[in-house]
Image 1 (spheres, helix red, strand yellow):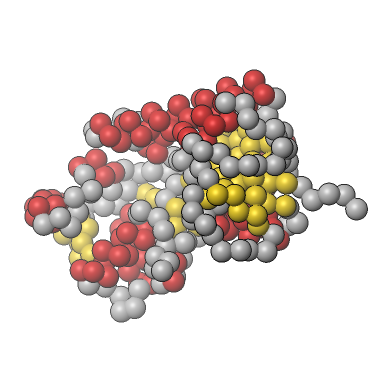
Image 2 (tube, one colour):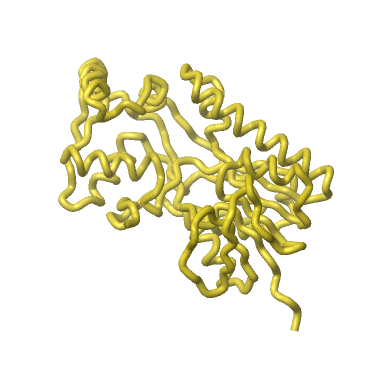
Length: 290
């Protein structure tokens, strides 16, 4: 009987890492997951305590390495040449393009850091003869741990309602964590994905306002959605910022509500059979874990 394939997963306790670990273990992989803090024992998963800055003892060779955490730190670790593997899949973000020309300096810096991580990854992979793939998700949801979909639900619960400007009609493609985990595993079996970057959006494209409406309808009781004239919404937003309710909601984020942030899933569908679901959040998926 052949030995089990070995996978190393960075960010294994994160919102994408958790479903990826389940899928790897179910598929018969021997999995080593890296975590900064102790984790409960899970069948088929060996936890290694440490981080990319202080790397724990890892297998001398892995059949695949997955990065579900910060891409810049992972790319720097890989570039140090400590890894022995033929295959790497790293999660980045569509923010690499979306925020490239943002009016906000911090957002432009994030986009530049994401693109630099991808460049460093592919340079290192080429030097080390590793087949590397980057997956760029859109709005991640499904684990109650994201900073977009779940945050909308949290704010709506807190305020017992939610407001949007009437021009918040930019298109969105929320993507479920389980579909991202499936995508990462599918890449390993698809040689055509080597050396490529893929957008991995959700399976449905819908206006921002409709996305929010579906989030609210999943909650019990369902908060009311108020659609306001843009000028009135901006005035209320300014007051909310002063009150500390929406300090991290900047003008660039407000402007993006009007923009279509749509990405082509066709290359991912063609090369590794990507088949994401539509957007139908449940209340459990919109509730942060205890």
